[in-house]
Length: 143
Image: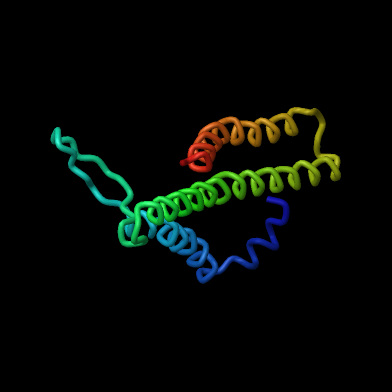
């Protein structure tokens, strides 16, 4: 948006493939612990539910509990950083740079473009922060 000619000259199929495949690889790596530790358990009344099984990671129940707390806390913090903090920072910085450039070039005749940019950033924050905060706090306060 800020430098369209520069961006058009540097776009390649190779770069596009990296941008497409990179997030998929990251997502697969980040979900690997779920594949390793998730299992189903059937309780005596016949109900079946999914749970994490850390039995192979400790000899005693106390060690397994410590491993479970550590893994789930790390997962929660990683989810907050990658799922909210990084995207929020990127959105805020990019829209801030756009606002600064259009303001510097005198392209703003009214305050409406700045209000729209601010509304986009605020909407992202309002929509995602409550969910991410509750998810983070529920994993950090896990006992």
